[in-house]
Image (cartoon, rainbow, N blue to C red):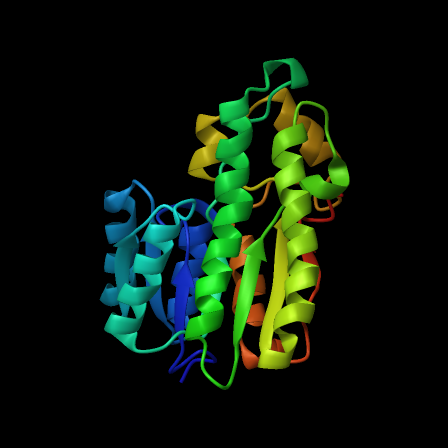
Length: 249
């Protein structure tokens, strides 16, 4: 019996990276997991296959969290498949680090629609599906909100909004036994940080130099924190921001 046996979780943006690692970790502790993805069906199906191969329960559901209709369908299909929801991990996000002069209206809205609006839409639906026992919402923010580096104003602003939303929603949803917390990772080796050129760059060297534990993180460094916040072990914790960054801040 895992610490999440009998529970159901939705992990948004779970076809790769941190989200995939969290989906696998929740499943390993007994949760039935909905692996949400926006475009990478292949990646989501791979994670579902890994979970099922170990005896777990999982399904992949497509949906863009920035679209209200997609979010409603995601939660409706979750209810139809598993009949309940106990855990929501708001992991889906986008980032494009660029100077202020490169900012466009479209890029601003792309970031805020996914990173902030998507989180709020998903939490709104989760709050209606959680049962009388409440539930756990885990937002994936970023240690960037304390670093505040140049050329990151839009992305950093979205994650600052996530930190604030976490605190507000913990107060608003607490009376319904719904806990809301945030995990703020440092630099993590993922498909995204590889394709963006951050890894093996001067930027990575700079951040590693600022990290007391002296390395870039991997998704498995983040997963245990998510499992903890999803479980009853954190039943008296809400409104908190847990920085999981090797000390980078």
